[in-house]
Image 1 (cartoon, rainbow, N blue to C red):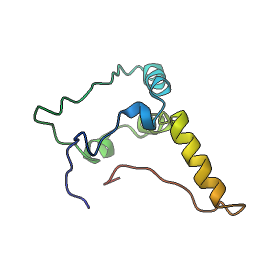
Image 2: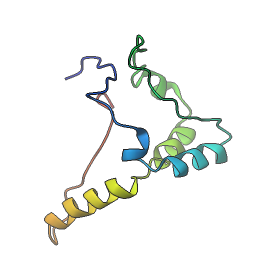
Image 3: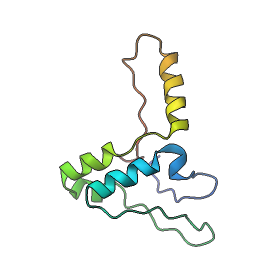
Length: 102
C-alpha cells in the first residue's frame, strides 16, 4: 500500500534492531554529515515521512554513500543468512528491504 503510515509502537522497531547504528553514524560522519538518532515519543503527533521526493533531488554520489551505509545489524544478518541458506545453491533471488515508495 502506498498510504502514509506514521510510526507507532506497534509498527516500529528501533533502528539498531535492523541496522548497525554505529556503522551508519560512522559512515555519515565520514561524509561530513552530522547525524543522530532520536526516539519517537508516541504520545505526541508524528511528522509525515517526506517519501522519496527529497531523495530524488539529492546528489547521486552522496545518496549512494548513504545507501551503502545501511549495514544489517548482527541479529538481522543472522536472519538474512538463514533465509539465503534456505535457497540452497541457487541464490539468484535476493532479499530486498526498502522504503515503501522507493
